[in-house]
Image (cartoon, rainbow over all chains, first blue to last red; front, top):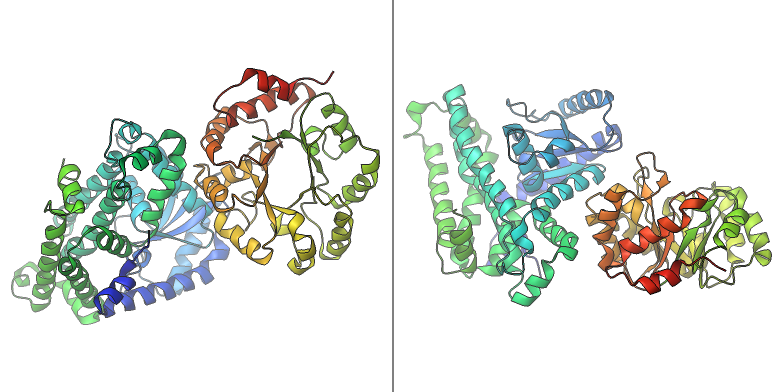
Length: 353
Length: 243
């Protein structure tokens, strides 16, 4: 099945989303630079993993770099020394450090990410790291630990989803995985309110716009990766044969392949393949391009970051961003919340409850 | 499963004569003659005319896992003297000058590496080697593949990407210290998850370091891993002790 991606979508519609392209180019340059500077520091059985806009390839000049040293093997005290060395190297590159929450900029152990899914041990930080590892993460340097941990997380989600393997279940949606993506999306929205409580207006406007765009898109890409388990197999017999226990590694590999792509490409691929609504699809990417245009503009970004509540309703930049978010949301609704296309049908049936 | 047997290095490391003697007590159809160090190559090749290998329908030769650049050409000349139908198992990271191996490429079985190595571990990394030596075949080491990616997705990718190149499998546990050990129950479970993707023509070569008393039981374990239906009669003929 031919994949499309954002660039191919541009060709199809005869458009050019300049801010998307610029952000992608900037991200690729930055990833290359990080590879050059950091790869030699990373010890065996670990991977330096970056998250956020850099991993999504939506990198703008003022973007920060969220990172973690992922350990999947023998743990040694020197790992914390390596983490500090990586921090120093990122400072030398004049990259904005991770945010205040403490979820990034340190060490993460694979044990918790793989074994603590749900339940009391699955903390907010653990859920965040795990979800982002699947949805928006890139390894720098040796990717072996990164790939291994991601595959094992997916293995848990998919192999333990009993319905996925039953012959009597004709519709194949990985509910365990989908529910965790949905939970993470809702966690982000609640955390947004929590940050407002803690930090009052500090950064509210910028966080709000990011929630409406990049956080929502990240969830949508995860949702589509799950729905594609069903959509990729129109023939029932072929679907049931594929989703059989002795084929589980192939299933894991398939879902991994969907999640390997950046969220924008995952969404572009899926919508182009399964939704015949070019206007809505184009509107999604047009609005997102506008969003990145705002983030790429240093003045506009700074304005959003420092906006106070009394100016929310009148500020032209915030108004511009909100209007773009309404277009984005409207277009998403036309596809995902209407049962006149396969994606909408499956979202309504399996994505709500 | 086509044929099954052991690497001599698993039976008696560095002592091929003893290994062959021990294995002669069983009816395995495959054997890998192992010369993992440069110093072992010439003696093993010189001894070949004296070895009774007539019981084996599949024989391969494991080249040294490392050699210095000055040893590469002499090694290639030594290996050239081996019977042409014997696959030569070679570690990709050992190669200094790929062009020197081109004349032997069709006889090589490039092996996927363990996680100590910086390359040659995954399908993506091995593609580069096969681009340089397109005629080479492959020895797929399931233990290495599991060590690199314990989910077995990596093994699945290797099996499906190179299915037409695979002539041999290595199978064993590979522990944290990169030693080839008896297959654990966790490894049994993991290996069984990819059994349907193993090419039926591939020879199965055990690399588990075994005591003499464990030779048969470890082989039977591998049989269980790789076969869904247990044909007791066929299995017994596979593993019967030679009279």
